[in-house]
Length: 347
Ligand SMILES: [Zn+2]
Ligand SMILES: [Zn+2]
Image 1 (cartoon, rainbow, N blue to C red):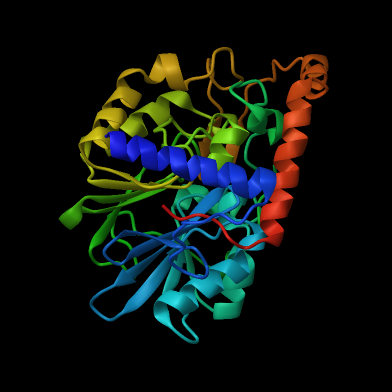
Image 2 (cartoon, rainbow, N blue to C red):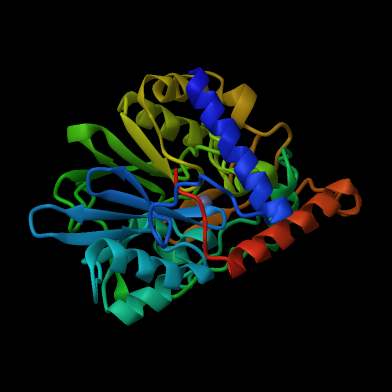
C-alpha cells in the first residue's frame, strides 16, 4: 500500500515536472512508442488527451476489434497503436462503439472509410450515428470542475455513417469477439453498452462509470484514479445510469477499463464499485442539475423529450470569468502542448 502510494506520488511528480517545467523526466518507464497500455490478455488501451479507446484480439483467428474511436486527433495514434500491436497493414475486423458521444467517435468516419470495415452499435444509439437526432444539451450546472463549464462547447450533433453501420444483435453477442458479451447500460447515452469477458472478469465499461474525475481538469491531466459515476455533464437519466452501475457491479469484475481514466482491478476496485452504487444518489447525481430531477427521454428515433433548462446563463458567464477560467485556459494550453507531443502515459 505504502509502495503503491509512493509510486503514485512519483508518477504525479514526474507529470508535474513534464508539464509545468518541461524537464526531462528520469526513470519514467515508457514501454511503447505510441504509449498504449495492456489491460489484460489480448486487451490494450490508449488515452488520447482525455479519452480512451481499446483494441481487443480474437484468439480464434488472430483478428481484432477496435472499441471506440477517440477524438478527431486520434486516427493517427490508433493506426500507430494497431501497427505496433498487430503489425504492418493491420486493420480491425470491425469497430464497436460503447456510445456515440463526440469523444468516442472523433476518428470513426475516417478510420472506418480508410479500413473499409463495418461499425456496430446498439440500436438505440443509431439516431446519433445516422444524422437523425442530436444528444440533449450538456448540463453546465452539474459542478465539480472546469469540464462542465466548458461542456457547452462540446459537440452534440449526430454524425452520419449510415452506409457502414450495423445494429448489434440483441442476444448480447459481439461480432468478432466470441469470448465477450455486451450489456445494455443506458443513462449516460441511450444505446450505451459495456463489454464483458467472463472467463477473466474483464469489463470495458465505456462511460457507464469511469475511473477518474472527469469533471476536474487536474484529475484528467494527472489521470488520478478514482471510481466515479458517468461524466455528469452528458448524463441524461440518472436513474437509468444508477441501474447500469448496479448491473455492472453485480458482475463482480476483476478488471475494469473505462472511457476515461486508467484501468483498475481487484478487491479494492470492487469495493469502490459497491460504494459508488450505494452512495450513487448522494455522490454521483448532481444537485439541482438539469437532468437530476427529470430525465430526458429517448426512443429508437432519438431524443423525444428534453427537460427545460434551469441554467442562469448570467451565472455561468460570471463563473467563466472567475479564476476557474484562468485554470481552464491553462488546461487548454496544456492539452495543446500535449497534442504537439504525442507522448502520453500508460499505467
Ligand atoms: Zn460519453
Ligand atoms: Zn466519454
